[in-house]
Image (tube, rainbow, N blue to C red):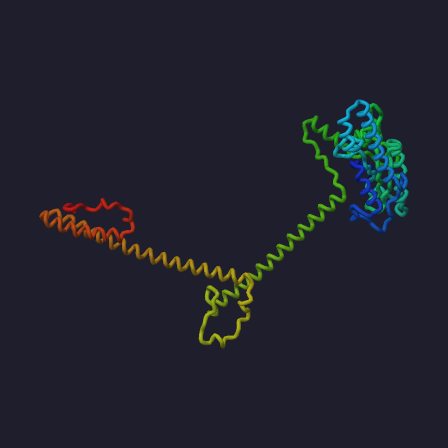
Length: 408
């Protein structure tokens, strides 16, 4: 049975000269994300570059800036650009690299799955340290072969989950500027930084001698899928351990807070339910009114205090009292509405009887002499006004609807 094949892992991270201080602080385990560090394991071990590599790198970059600045001022003076010369003197030196989101330097990480480092030759002989030695030897050969003097630092981290190597590349180059060759930082000077797939091919071939293989060809898989009209596979974004742990800690904290709020809400609801039952029992027993007022009787003073004193009730008491008040208000409103409706029905019935009688009067009036008819019409106007006042449906009617004199 063939042994499992593990990929060699190569990753580039952008780096600015201003990041060097933080890099060194983390190397000495004095800053940065230290949550995954095992203090019982050996501290990081320097593999390349002297102990003052960071200070030397910063000093060299500053010297590049000054040299380029001096060349620019000399060029402006030679061309008699006095205003520009004065302006640039005030502005000072500029960074000797082209601005980009990645920065002019690169931090490089080389590792493999921790299971590969823990492999054993037999069931009882462990050679994990030998695996690390083999990996370290191949890694340093590959770094020096491809980056030469621009490899200014390398270290081995052995106090984390898996053995890995960090390296810092300062890509030195020259550019024709201001009539002379100026030193600059230019990442693309190195083919393996310029072409990520080429870097993966290179490291995969180099480490194949110790049993590791190239990592998955994600970009090629995406290109093939697009060419074939298929949905390309998702290219996962690498998340640094510090970023992942920060997000995970935030997620767990939010989840714990949500659980705590839910438990607190359940407790408050239980307390309110108990208080509501106590309030209902007190109302049922005649100890208090529905609005919360105590019932005053002759033997109030002689009554023993309630087992659940309502004076110390929580917000559930206020909720219960408000509920009872609202219910009582609705009952009163219902009763008033019912009484009003019954009154309106009685008035409507009586008005209907009066109107029926009025219709009989109109029929009789048509058969009597005119003089008597005018007298009856006058009396009828008065009756009509009273009828209209009683009938709520008559509000807003025009007075012109009343019968005219002599014509009931």
